[in-house]
Image (cartoon, rainbow, N blue to C red; front, side, top):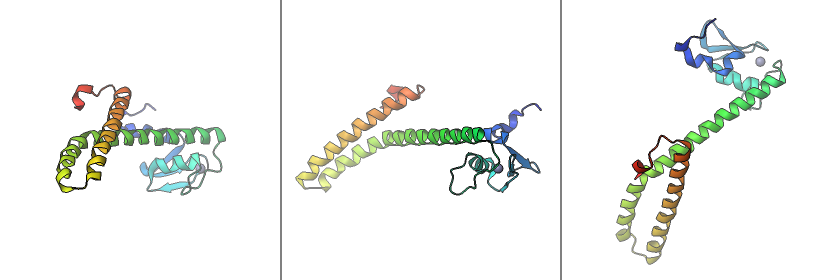
Length: 151
Ligand SMILES: [Zn+2]
């Protein structure tokens, strides 16, 4: 059967080990042990095959090699998600920096204690350094972002 491009998400690696019941993507069945999973789609069955998830019973019939491959697959997906989250957090910092600067200046007349005046510029400097590091990291991993556009 030729792969259908319009159902791209169906070609998830999980579908190699899973059967759909009644053509319903939310009704799946493990090809190895026949365990049925309702309402959670293919991701839960991938966890079932990979094992090691506290909320999902591990497959008893699935070959060890496939279970291991699936575990690596799910770990990689998790890592990719973490990378994306880290990049989003860094971008948010970049966007917030001008606002922080603005309110940092306003803070000077709100906080009259000398100690605060010493701490705040230092914190801003640290923030700036870490943001510049993040910009470099993002620039290296995602070459699509222009360095000049980030100022
Ligand atoms: Zn199974």
